[in-house]
Length: 87
Image (cartoon, rainbow, N blue to C red; front, side):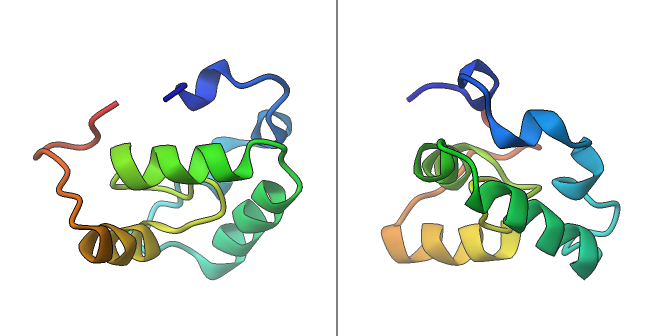
């Protein structure tokens, strides 16, 4: 699985990270929706979403918020190691 920072021309490279990692855990809904909108136009949407599901606790990855990824992991039986992220 490629790491997102190695993607060719990702849409998120055009905006700041504050949209993808808002200060509050579930985030400012405006910034979260802006992040999701950026993700929707990215050619790496599916690959980035899988990265987030399998590797990241925080932020929006591939248009999927942290809370939604947590639910997906529960359904799939994926457990992340303890810590901020596993990348």
